[in-house]
Amino acid sequence: MHILIVEDELGIVQFLQQGLQEEGYEITTASDGSKGFELTQHKKFDLIILDWMLPKINGLDLCKAIRLKDEITPIIFLTARDTVQETVEGLRAGANDYIKKPFSFDELLARIKIHFRTHKKEDILTLGGIKIDLTKHIITNNDLEVALTQREFALLTYLVKNKGKVCTRNQILKDVWEINFEYDTGVIDVFMNAIRKKLNLKIEEDYIKTIRGIGYIAND
Image 1 (cartoon, rainbow, N blue to C red):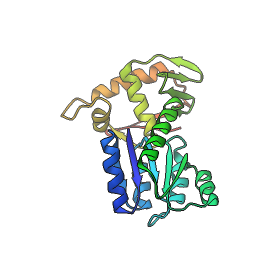
Image 2 (cartoon, one colour; image 1 turned 90 degrees about the horizontal axis):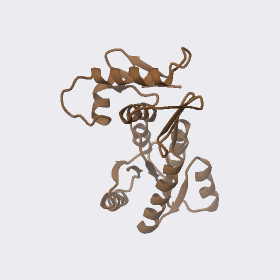
Image 3 (cartoon, rainbow, N blue to C red; image 1 turned 180 degrees about the vertical axis):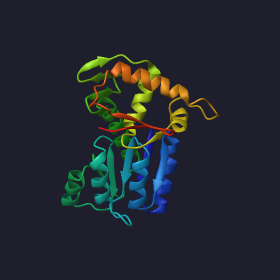
Image 4 (spheres, rainbow, N blue to C red; image 1 turned 60 degrees about the horizontal axis):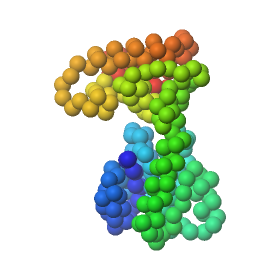
């Protein structure tokens, strides 16, 4: 699981990074809201931890900005802003949880694990009429189940998780095929043709576009 920490206090960042990495999580950090927002636009995270008082873009505005495009990823506020009104404001901005500083690492870790369990149960991706149930490993298009191979499922899921972003063929080979050396990217086109055929998409359902010479982009 990949966690993004957006926090400007270096000591807290180092403490969280060390503790969470020891628990087996992959960690990316940002020291201001602007960098945090930029990271969320280019990579899919499994959970985000936000401070409220951040340089450039505060945590509340950052949470709202993330929620405009991402309604699923769990967001936890970790902040010294501790009034009831501020807690409610943070949750209304789209956060899933609110932990006040000073905090217990064990409590934070327990909350993270709870959100991962809940998130896993409810993790459904959508692309137009296409729904991908990551827990049940089922894909439907307009409520009709579509049978894909494991690789086709992984490729379609990758494109939908990166909806709105151009995915290059080389990046797909690296992230989906886990190939980090020179390889014929034409294999991706073969799989994409099979996926489109199995989804039986109508002309107006052009959810996955080919970017000639580059790769693919999924969009509603």
